[in-house]
Length: 106
Image 1: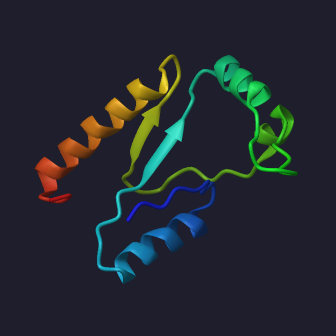
Image 2: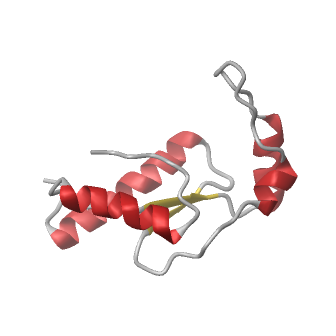
C-alpha cells in the first residue's frame, strides 16, 4: 500500500502509520523536501494545475503553512538540484537499504 499526502502535523502522520498497522503492513515514512529556498519558491510559483477550480497556494501561503518537525525515524528525500528521476533513484536506494537491514519489502 502506498499513501501519498501532505502530512505537516504529527497527528496526521500518526494516523497514516496507524492505518498501515491496522492493515498489517510495515509503514515506511518518507518526507520529501526541497532544501534550496529559491528553487522551492520557483517550483511553487511556476507549477500548473490540471484539476478544474483547484486553487494552488502561493509562496507566502506555503511559508505560512503549519509544520511540526518529525519526532521519529523516517526517510528524507531532498529534491533540491535533482530532476524527478534522480529523486526516485534516491528513494529506491533508501528503500533497498531498509529492506536489507530490516527484512522488509519482500
